[in-house]
Length: 438
Image (tube, rainbow, N blue to C red):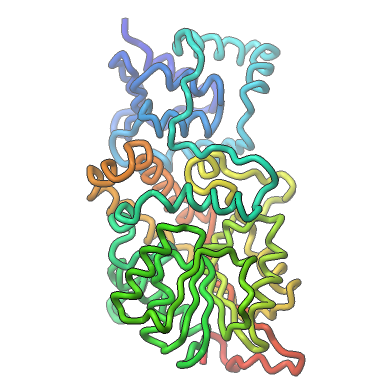
């Protein structure tokens, strides 16, 4: 009798301590669970072996990337239902494989569940991780070499792939959405509005010199040079991004005003600059290096110069020492990336000597942006798979959909922090009225 789905549902509900909110379809074609919900499809028994050897998020991530599990129906709804169950349960860090096995030996209830899962999984060692998983670099975090490797893992997957996901703007950060009155109603318009918002906050003027830290494919420096008349330096650690940005700049006839470098922020020696933008880059810096990052960008600014730091933030924890990097993100999306609460970011910028003048949350804007990127990916799915791999496309679909929900549910946020290297005179050059950037 085909009943794997029923047995898996029973196991899941024993672990959750509540009804499973999704329907399950197993490899033996059995189905069980509430009707009318998305269906969690477990295509291969080896998905269970992955979970046995790596309980928690990483085991599930490997099964997803490998195509051992899938979702039929609305992926957002499925993720929201599952995340809601785990959050209501107050689940902390998933047990390691060894800790889970030891717990199963001691607890009769867990021992019975573990034995049932082993029977369903079948004999054999766990499959190898999917090839899309980042290789763990040795040595200390956030050295120049290790950061370059981490950036390459994420960004050097082909510029055409990013064109399909991001659209013509090639801006890989939160857009700035508006209403019919202000015109920011499409992704391209909203990305242009975001770039312009950054330029206005920095009060850019013709003849000034701008540094864009983590310049991506050059969209920010192009907009600033074309619309505000500045000269700009953009830095990235991705060779593919740099080549693409230089081509765009040449086509725009702006090579004399814009320079793109493959360079780390710690290697810049030709400051000072009138203004610095850092958009979606500081998440890669890491907590151990953040004070250094803040001090470096402070030193690269002229007195009175402005920094616009656009950065994703997580919710603060009662015990900050308990923070652990998300395993799926770390292994498949942004190796070595770390998130900090916005309060800590503000404090470290001030500790470096900045005067923080404005903090604007764009949390809902990022959720809207991510949903547009997911729609772009799904529209170009076959091409995205051909350009990268089925696993890589699945990584992106899961990562962006889950991130959209996290922003919508206030589990993470994104903030623009405007800071000034205020001179000793105290003349910050800021207007008296808030949000009047000039």
